[in-house]
Structure formats: C-alpha cells, structure tokens
Length: 86
Length: 444
Image (cartoon, rainbow over all chains, first blue to last red; front, side):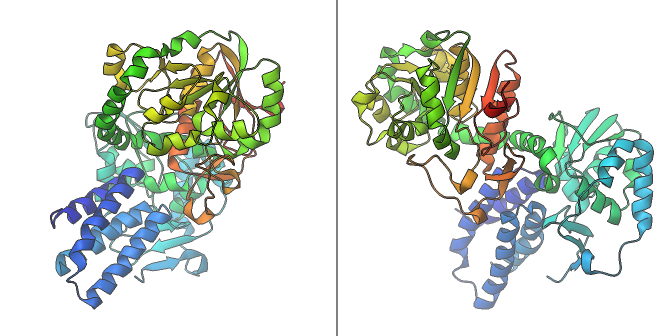
C-alpha cells in the first residue's frame, strides 16, 4: 500500500456512510485503519493521543450506527489532522 | 468536542412557533401523517449540535445530518437519483436536506418522502423549519409504504432509527443499497468458485439433476429445517409429521443436530462455496447412516462433502447470473437463492410439489443470543453488545440479528409473495416473524 491509500479509503468510507451503504462503509473504514497503522510509527506521542481520541470516537459512532457523525469525523477531523501530521 | 446541548435538560426549548408552522402545513396537506406524529413516542435522548459549523440534531445517539456540511452531504445522497428523473423516492426524513436538494431539479415532478419513524420526524419538525420544502406541491409525505420504489435515495440516520413498523421496509432499502457491495464480493469469488466447479466436475457429470426430484411430493406438506436456535424445540413435531409422510428438507448446518436427535432428513441442501470449513458440518457423522438421505448440492461446495456422501446426490445451480455460463456447459435445474442455503431448501420443497411448507428453525436472528441450534458446529453465543441490528420476532419483540440474516429474511419474504399458491407456516415465535408465513400454532 502506498501512503496515499489511507485518504482514498477514508473518503470512500465517508461517502458510503453518507449514502447508507453500511457494509461498504465498514469495509472501507477497516481498510483505512489498515493503511494508516504502518504510517504511525514516526508520530510523536501527543499527536498520536489526539488522533487516537478522534479515531475512538469514530469507531464508537460506527458501532452505534451513527454513520453520519462517523463520516463527519473522518472527513472534517481525522483527514485534516492526518494531513498535518503525516 | 464540547458542541452538544441536551435539549431535554435545557430550559431554553426551541420555540413552539417552528413546530406549529411545520405541523400546520402537515395538517393541511397530509392529515393522516399528523395523526401518526401525534401518536409518536418520545425518543430517549435528543441532542442539539449547535456549536458545529452546521446545526444538526442527534436522536438516540444518531446524528440526523452532517454537522459540517449538510448541503454537500445531501448532494452526495441525491446523486443516487439519476438526473432527468421525473419521480423520486426518499426513504427517511432527517433534517429535510435530501428533499431540498432534489427539489432544485426542475425536471422532477413528484417526490415521495417516506417516514420511517414518526418520533424522529416530530423532533426534526420541533427544531428545524421545514416549511420551505413541505409546501412544494411536488412533495408527498407518506407513512405506510411496503415497497422499495426506484429511483430512490435514503437518509442513513432514518434507517438506523426506523421503528418496528418500518423494519421490513428498512431492511429492503438496505438490501438494495448493499447491491454494489454484494456484486463486488461475488466477482471477487468468481475465480475461486470456477476452480471449485472444475475440481468437482467428475461429480457434476456423474450425479443426477435436481429436476428429478421436482413433483415427487405433489400437493403435499413438506418440512424445511433451518439451523436456527429454535429448531431444537421442534424435534417432536418433526418426528410426528415425518411418520405421517411429510418429507423433511434440511439445510446442511441442521444435519448434525437432527441426527443427534435421531432424525434423518430426506434431503440435505448444501450450497456454500465460501465456507472452507463446510465439511466440518458433517464431521463425526456416520456416512453409512445417511445412505437414505439425498444430498442436493451446488457444484461450488467443498469436494470433501461430495466424497463423504454415501446417499444419492443431485446437482442444482442456484439462480445467480454468475452461474449462467456454467449452466449452459452443465445443464441442471436451478433453485432460488439470494445467498442463504434456506432459500434453495424452501424452493426445492416447493418444486417437490409442496403446497404446505412448514419452516422450522428458520430464525434469521439470535433468539436467546444463540447463533445456531445446539449441536451445530457453528453454534455460538452472541454477546448483546456485539449485536447492533434487530428484527421483530413472532411476538412483536425486537430480537438481535446481523445484516446478512436480515437480508436473507427479506429475500425469503419476497419469494413467499411470489408463490401465493403455496401456504407457508413458521413453527416458531422466537425467531424472526416471516411475512407471509403463518405461525404454525395459529393455523386453522
């Protein structure tokens, strides 16, 4: 996977969630996390903590089927944060 | 993120004015909708997001629309409706953004908006002004729809909040929305299944066509055993009816528990090419003891199962377009299936000539938090916390399930609707209520 895969998967997950395509959204969210993990090794503790917080909130939203909030967090919180720190 | 305000604990309730002007329009245009709003139950929690870039509302933990860019979100959803469409259907209400975006299309003549939960709608009408789009003569607001109409788009939050009376419609909308995903998965499996079919070719050429079983029990009563947890409650009934000549068609996962109860089905159906461990369903069974039981199989199943089987074997294709090519090379009859083995089992029972089909252990859910009937190798306990989806059981209670099972249930219901000449019965009240299948205890 290249280091831009995460953004493609993140965007695809958010779009699927906004369309009500649950299975597709959950699959793409999983792929996003898989693509992201190898990129986090060089990230400092503080940045990692803030990313962890918003990622946990996203997964909790997905867990209760609050897909539009999950999509918001992905696109408007996580994506800008990752663009800054990666 | 400190952006939310629980409206239940706030003294600063939104003015009644918004609600009244919304309701006045609803009263004028759709009095029957007003009635259902008046009977709406209060949600457990209503939270206003008013410090986000866009105002939004969260009901019972579900955000009704983006709190960042509602117009963009609604435009993404509206893209499911092809440009140039004169009619469109919207499943769900949300904050009204999706109808608003669609009404910008001048060519649109009719927009049907289907409510899936009156309490969601009422809370939305309480906080947000909807008069701008509700006044549009092209809009119809509907409460009771049982079909998915095309072209359509959906508000995901409304699907998540759908109440019991909309559960069936919600599941059908989900089924349609999941089609691209299902097709993608099918094409991923194509190569693997082709290899399986070629690997099983000797059996495929040697074994009989399932069509030979068609009409073998004309105008009779046939039992179909699924592998749901409630199957164990029916062993006595199965023995009794079996003795009276009612054949038993069982899905593969139900075989071991049935045999353990001393019941040998007349037919076992097996179609799953995904499950590498499928042959585990047959482990610890004495092949010789099954010599009088017929196996009806799809050529994509594991070869070990075919080698194990000592009784007669019959080949069937399921009716996915994927098998079209193969069914020309190896012409065999087809059985209905939308992914679950219960579908071809039921279709076979009907094609055998059954005019009364009794479904046993067809639960499509986890009654008692069990996944399968005791004794099935797949059986496991599902923790309440890991199951987020539900269907209504025969008592009208919510029972946990997963999206796949919910989809299989709605596909079976569609099949039942297409066969009015057959009487379907459901043996259990514990599993999912199956539309079109009368509870066996209530038969006249």
